[in-house]
Length: 460
Image (tube, rainbow, N blue to C red; front, side, top):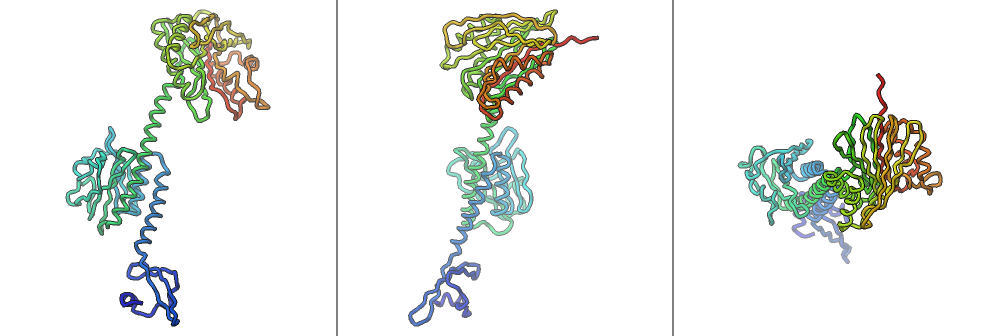
């Protein structure tokens, strides 16, 4: 043991050491190594591992913190986790500030040992040196030391040191991490560790923000692609059901729409775009938009379908559709319904007595040939009668006892014989449940059902 070591260890404690153990002396950590000499004596070597152990602890802590940061894709929750972790391991008080929104800056504050708070605040970031640059992500932006004496009141009070560290995101700034202490200042190693933590925190917050933005965009676009909520009318009952092919999808290639015409008339359309998923849903949106625009100039079924056919032929998409359109007009007997098919399954007429009839309409596919052929049928719905429009996702639903049999048109018609006089809502729910029960947990196509029912007259 040399003289320097003897000054650290004035007592003869070497015999109590064990080779390979770690001992602590004067707030430093030493690894003990013993070397046996030829004369029977032993030489003890002490390797200072204080900094190495500290780095290991920080690396392990950073790993745990990174795991906690990736547990949420909600920006507010992610900011809260960042503030909690920083307050527990880096500072006495922490502020996490995100770039501004319309309602102000998202700000999360956390004091050690206290629950965090989150709010939207309009704060003057220019009053804090370097903060506005950090929030805008001007490169390079190092950590900024702030004099507590000139810090604004909203930032901090009664602290001895303040450091502003950038939170870098995925190519955009995620915000700023402001660390405050009331006692000793941050060491160079602690500041470096804070920057490592901030880099991971920024990525987590940025990922959560991007996910939320995409979710909002998807929700808004999906809302426009879904079938509309149907209004209530005094002279007609309308009800619809829709189910996309994938359990995780909300939109697909089936659709229905209802448009109001003069003189209490309604124009209804139900169709099926070739294909499934998002691509089919996008084409569905184009078809619905085209029908809405064409209705401003033409309501005749034959002209409408011919114009729609030409519109689809001029697009780059190679997707055709099948569709059926109808015009509903109130009459003394109930409802007069004009139906025209463009390659779609003919609607079914469900009488109040339970009789089921097939509408005499047919036609060619829309969007595949230069000219189409259509045939129109007219039916009168007496009170309690219904007209059911549906897509082949219902009749081609595969399942049953053996799991490989189609539900089929005949089975659907037989099932409808027990639905005479049902309200429109009950009718579409019954058909939808029949098909869903038939397929069980198996794969299926998109499904859409629309019922037009003549209300029963009220008795005085």
